[in-house]
Length: 223
Image (tube, rainbow, N blue to C red; front, side, top):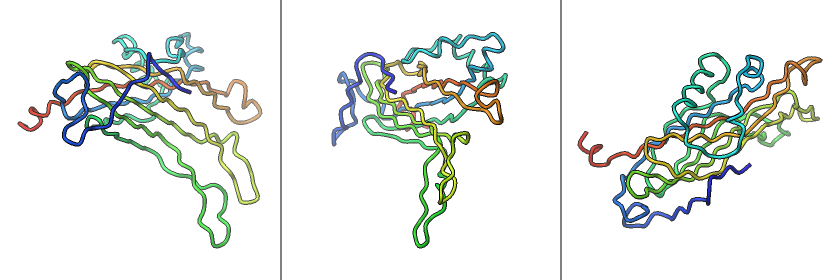
């Protein structure tokens, strides 16, 4: 799934002699991107009479304080959980990558051969340029991969796990310190037992809050 807001951002490679900027302004050299990747339970919220319809439309929006406070409310009351909450510091024009997770084996390796593994967890890649003033334009790619044990398959070489992946590939144009929300990725996780697809099933939505902060290089050097 591609979630976009307006035309895709044009990001040019960094020149050899200076950092990449847009609009002819002096770069802040670095920016810190906080990524809050949160999975909220639509099923639990509906049972309690809460509406999360505003999270279901695919796209990128500048989040207001009410929306951010409501996400924090969901976390405090066990209606959502944090998949990852990194702060990624990167230089303008260069890609920075974050990964939190691991690998799981697929079946039993054949004699004399190494086993096959698949990656599960959260991966994020960010690349940005500074625009006029304190605005930031960034390309963001996110991938969340989890095990789906309800759909694992027995094979002659052992159990082959099923995976559930959700991806976002988008661009943002935002002021330093503002928070944007990426949403709209829904998933359905089956429960266990005879009612696996009934009351025990849980429908969720992935919510990603992105907050870039430009770092003043002169202030950083002074510290």
